[in-house]
Length: 183
Image 1 (cartoon, rainbow, N blue to C red):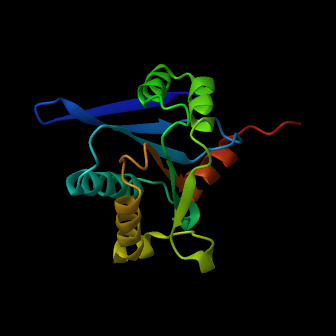
Image 2 (image 1 turned 90 degrees about the vertical axis):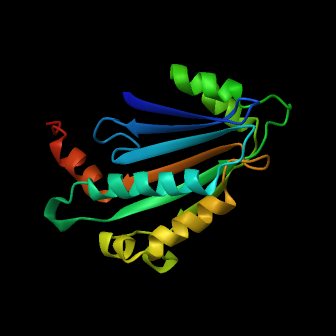
C-alpha cells in the first residue's frame, strides 16, 4: 500500500492545542479491497473542530469529487463517516497519530479496537444504497448532508478519531479493467 500524505496542522490559542487533519490518498492495487477509495483522517488533540475546519474539509471533498474519473459516464461515488470515541484505557490519540504517520497499520487497528465499535454513517439517499452521483452532489443535497453529519461527528471530547471515506465507483472500475487477467 502506498499512501501520499498531506499533513496539515493548525495551532490554536496560547496553549498550542491543535487539530490534526490529514488527507490520505489510498493507492491500493486494482482488485484489492479499497481500490477507488480516498480517505481523510481527523484526530482530536484537545480542540474541537470549528465551522471553518468543516467547511475546509467539504471544499476539499468538492475538489476531489470534481477530479474523479468518469469512465463510460460512471460518475457515482459513496461517502462514509466513521467516528471513534476515547480509548477504554484512557490513553490519548497521540498513539494513533504516531502509528498513522509511520504507516503502522497493525498499531492503528489495535488502537481502534481499544476504542470500541465506531459510529458509521453513510451520506446519501438510503433508497439508492447511499450511492451519490455528481448531479446530486452539485445540487447541494448530499453536500449539505455531509456538512450536517460532520457537525455531529466533529473531532471533540466525544469523537476522538473521525474517518471520512470517499469511494469512487468510476475509479474502481478503471483500476479493475487495468488489472491483468490470469490465464
